[in-house]
Length: 205
Image (cartoon, rainbow, N blue to C red; front, side, top):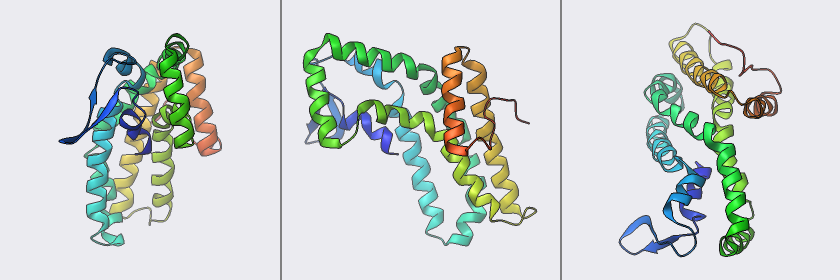
């Protein structure tokens, strides 16, 4: 997942290590606790998506028909990990506010990010938003696959179960987001991604 690379590629304190792919941290710009406040649990999301991608790639290499047949069952094995998005989304706006404050308070951080945002061709805030949009995208893509299947076939039934499970997680997120502005964010993303055709706010059964 592109956004999950944010933590290592845009981390203002990361230094390449010859012995490891993981970044080394120092406190030259901002301390580790501030990095955590900005990126939250992106590393956990990155690890989960990496494992899921590996498994989806494995079944895809066995042929398209086999991949479609196993898609729903495979995703159901990962549904508990989708809750990682809930934790991230709940803290998202607070993280953006903290990042903005740190850029004002720590000129070296702002200078670092201005340079690397130009190199990357995108803003850090854009990358941080990516996990917020991910659940609607999953539902959108899975729904497209489901529409191409016979309604009563086993693959369609298992895939429908996976879609409903993800919808259930989005429902819980909106219930937990008591802050009206954050609820509005979820609704806006739903309208952009689904053109208003899927309701992520009302309860789903």
